Length: 474
Image: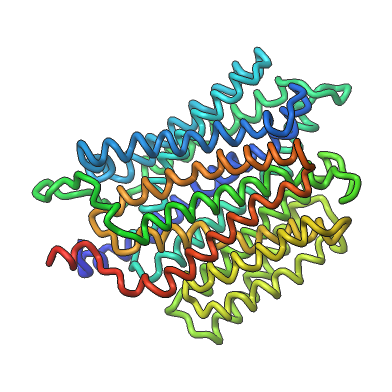
């Protein structure tokens, strides 16, 4: 599709973006429910930290299996999305995720941990298809220069789902549908996940009725086969960076409730800790809204400052209304918002430079998490969320930048790297069993160091990357 075709369709992009953003919200909500399931299933089935992290292993392991299948189909038969179109791909992903939610009913009925893991695997397969299709689709709904800004905006609503999930989901499982005597019972998960399945079906119905622009290959064009996407060095590095990012983010989120339960930290129970977990994911929401504004190069610096200030204040009030905490308990977040502002302006709207700055800050916060106690340790681990904010979208768009006809194939490789969410928490769980929860945060430190290096690499080299089309003379 050439630039004139893109411009001619731009007037149609608002409704598709709103529709896809609703989908981002729902899958963010359901994904974050894993952080509630981990301490819940750990107590229910008397699991070790390592065993409880199998929740993330099965869920995010499905991303690897699903993306691997997609990639091998694309190199042998041609890119499936180019054949069927993004809309059909998105609907298939929603239906698969819905089936995964329904599988929670027999898992809870038989109170079987392996069945829970199987349901999470199927749910993860559905979200794999959505990651491959929806993220790439958003990046195509406009110019390549504004792709990071657009994806940050949709990811911000994904983060809104992850912010609400610990509070609402925790209330559903720990309180509303729990046993009357307060004991843990597997049946508490049945109704919530049936509700999630129903909502996903409603979203699928909405998407099926909305006209979405098509970016699939025209009948007369060559179907892309082979390993062409792997000729791009920045894509290969981006795949590894995505592995580290998802691994680090998921590992930190998975351990927050257990971390805050530690007597040397805060000694909170699950009912209180889930509200602070919302702050972790709420920080990501603040940062993504700010990122959508900061990385939009069509807005002047003066207007950016005004828009970012207004967005930060509004989103902070939204978070305050969601979590069951006083203003004094969440006021420390204002410091991180100010620091986030400073980091964005130092980054000067450059996705790669901003990525490196945010990764460096998270390394510092993780070290503080490991060496301090009490509120300082708690604030440090919660502050990581706001600097995670732009990492997924920036890594994703940097990795697939300039891939041309290999965009969907490259997207499947980047999504395959979400395997990090399965592997990294397992390693951290092992260290937590051996050396304690606090010391186990050394694992995500290395993850963010790799992201910092990827950002520096892209800052130096990505400007020299040519698109596939220009190399081919198209």
